[in-house]
Image (cartoon, rainbow, N blue to C red; front, top):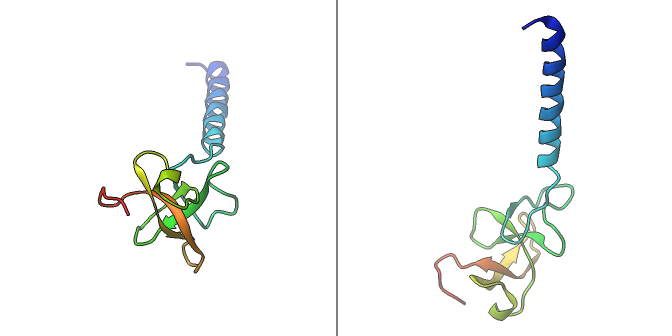
Length: 101
């Protein structure tokens, strides 16, 4: 392939790669998606926020609840907290053992 064709093709490939990488960071997490409580801006789409289930190694996008009926199907109302803080609340999480509270 001659130089006149190769350079524009490389430039086009680089531009497409940058566009693809930029698009990956724009989407916010939906309910149940893993997130980081240490992010400067929320990883979660409103009205969800990032909380950690007590005893769980990861955090997810979720919302507050008062009882199980406030949560989507397949999830239950359990204690949660923001990692590294003492802030706790009742939130919708997947049941760890399949049971309900």
